[in-house]
Length: 53
Image (cartoon, rainbow, N blue to C red; front, side):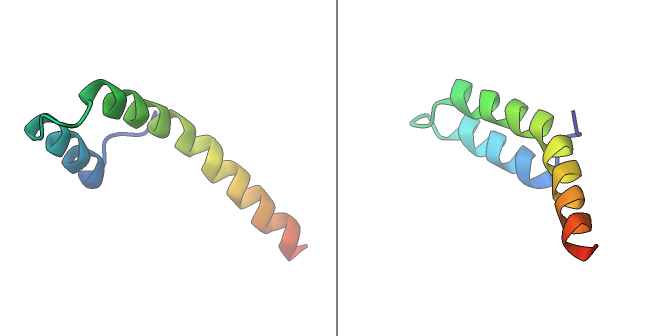
């Protein structure tokens, strides 16, 4: 899992401050995104390499 970015921290803080937002959903989404990002990056580079060849 990648470390928290500044934007990710900002999104999580806004969720804590704003009571109308569902913080459980936002925390789950943040965790999923950080787990998924390395895979997405690898697939993106593979696709770029395939187009370049």
